Image 1 (cartoon, helix red, strand yellow):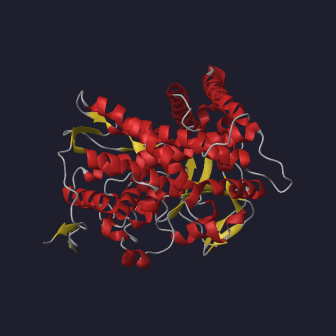
Image 2 (cartoon, rainbow, N blue to C red):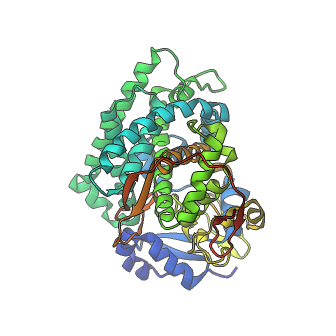
Length: 470
């Protein structure tokens, strides 16, 4: 079986500082030079297979998913800080937990959560109103605050205190950055342990855990709620037993991690893209007015959005929150002529797949028309993976879409905004793909708009955005 191209161990080690700064830049360079599948050594130490090949991706994530487990990065390093839950387990334990937690994201439950989410958003927008009075703001931390508060209250209900939300949010962000450093620069791990860095992050995690555990224990003696915590507490295994408080804590923490950054990053990049496309922005606003009128947006509205969904999907293509997914082969395997020995780590390079000229025409351009129903039917499977793929596709993807639409509705219908000139907008690939230096914008209260009567639209293929045609 022919060997695949490889970046030498020495070259990989020399690239480790650049990988720590921006792995997307390094991996995209080698994807361009070596093709869609190649070998690389993380930190010059750990051999991995990098791929953007949809046939390989489909095989690893779906067709032969049973042969591929989550890697040490997630099972060991994330598990060390987040406990043993849905993100950090595999096999039968994972299947059991997924079945139990899935009910929390059923349409009926999402509709019930809509009320909690809207209440949280109303508070967040009031805070945002005060912040923008002082001038331009970095939208990234503000959207992080909005989404984290929304997810936290979806989990723990309205009684979760603001100061506790901030403590847990800060802990999660700090710990995630530390996990990335442990992974991309593994040769520093002995120093992390000796210097006390590891212990400092463990103490931060323990402090956040104690806050959330107090809410869990308090809830045990209260009337049932309508939040995700209640779903976790009501879940029963085949023997009739429920989850322990410790497991409820782990699953809660992992839902917080997975549930807020996806949306806040997606929204940050989306507002950045819309700031230079007033044609698209106006069409989105008209769609919100047409579908929601003066009503608050709820889960029942989500399926009716067409153009706005296309805009979101294209933004997630250009800036996928989960820029990579990794798996480890349990047994020897092969895909076509590519051999994958037992123990090999396969990194599905999602960002690279989303930007591959082979599968996307003008991949660096913002073109929502890629996601019309007609064009979606023509797209090759496993070239678009904003929420992963196969049986481990993100369990909260429908919640994320509801959250993005809800915040987008509130922000776009209330404010006009523009990008502060002179900025360099770059990605920083941590656990999630985030803006490296933030995205600064100026927000002003929008002039009152009449609820528009929907007009017919023709498609301008050159721009990808519909333009009003009387």
